[in-house]
Amino acid sequence: MKKSEVVDAIAAKTGLSKKDSEAALQALLDTITGSLQKGKDVVFTGFGSFSVSKRAARDGVNPATGEKIKIKATTVPKFKAGKSLKDAVKK
Image (cartoon, rainbow, N blue to C red):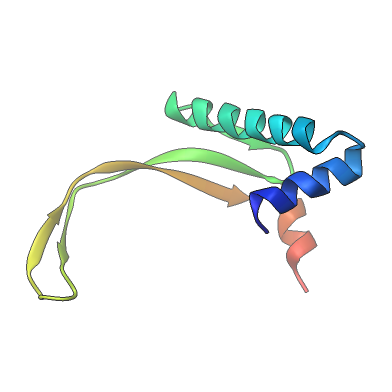
């Protein structure tokens, strides 16, 4: 599902215009991003949680050449699905 399809679904479910729905979705995404940049977790009880994780520096291998390379330490976002979301997706 693409962002435009999510905007259409929000507009259909809420009665908001597509422009307002897109603004609301973008505000949500900006808020989550801003919180993660500050190192804060974002939790939607039952749905899931967004957090920040640090990856240590490590050695890697370039698959094309087999050459060993150094991979720098980095910070990455993570998402962990909540129980309600997991149960809804199970078949």
